[in-house]
Image (cartoon, rainbow, N blue to C red; front, side, top):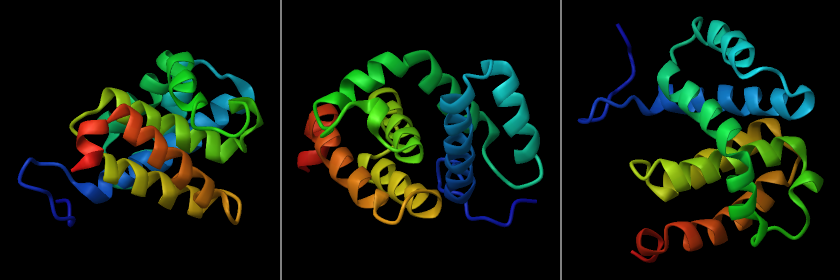
Length: 151
């Protein structure tokens, strides 16, 4: 039995957060070695089986980022102060995951996307990396989810 509180729609926010952290690690690994999608998901899915996480969401994030990376990078480009390849690896992974959620997961509120990216970057990134991610995603959310961001 899962001890976490599920929302009325059946989503467990704690499990989703864990899935995002695992996805960040998987995307980071992919950025370093460009591993095969199936092998990458298999490796991290196996690790995830030992902690409560939303495996389906993890797989959607990883597959989505890998399949749409050029589109996501283009969506982020206008909000970056440098080329995407110059952004720190952890921050780049967090930005790509957040861009995927902003563009392909309208069911996830933009504030959740930003907060999760900031939390992951605080946990795994450089000392001030979360500040950079926050600034980029605030602008990206306004552009990608303008109607929602204005509410």
